[in-house]
Length: 398
Image 1 (cartoon, rainbow, N blue to C red):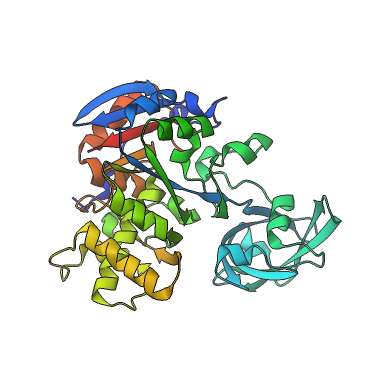
Image 2 (cartoon, rainbow, N blue to C red):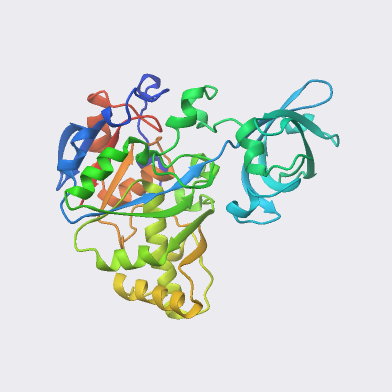
């Protein structure tokens, strides 16, 4: 069952949503529960979420990670920011850098970039024209150094000169509308190069209505990386080199998870990956109180963990860690790979859009609801649902 062929389906081009709908909450919503499917619009969600549920949102914020620099000859080189290196690997600190910084990047036309520096003129509202220079300091690892002389931080540089990093399968350049619509209304912490797209359907009004109806909400952070779009090239998908993403959890997250009486429903696969990674960090702490907050892609499948601790035991171990270190937040990394056979520890529901054939996200959905994933996708295709990032969504309940 680890053959990728089992998780392929035919996705016609005309089913891919190239643009968002006029209103976020007018998308279609398919509800799946106990093997049964029903069709709704997203505005119905207030009636569809079980009472006493805890909805967990990913409040990462997409940065304008796609930059187009120029050689002195006029040739254009695309630089796509993926991960900060200097002065810090922490996104919040890296985006505050002044005058210089180094990022790991994906580079288009890299063969045309020799040893010369590239240049980009941007216009800042406060400081006028700013010249930014890019130097390739480590070709093998894709490390690029950026330099500028104006008294602005790197976040302002990319906000003024960068482009919204739309997924490659949309096959179009970003437009003004995307600055708002490829961002959730609850985004807060800059660092993602792709949106947690299940959250794009929510409005402030719907969140308020859900809370008014007895549903609780909580917010954590996973900075979505470009690796989420990396295709699986291995016939045995377990050999896929899973991408690494940075996560932040807070003391209130752990307390809310422990207090939850109903379903725990992540808004999107990124929130689900964060929640399940949190459990495994608790398991690591139970084995070693000084364990690093790094979740290996195969940790959940290690045979030596013969009896998995309960959710409560694992989460309590994290609380102990936080209290011992007198901190309200923990910063970690996860490469967790969720595929069929995974035993979910925290999540009992999932909001998610419709994903590419043979992707890691299809595997995650199949892990959660089993072979019925195919029934859901066939139903969505036959009912003219819109697919991928700007597409329609689903509520999956066990």
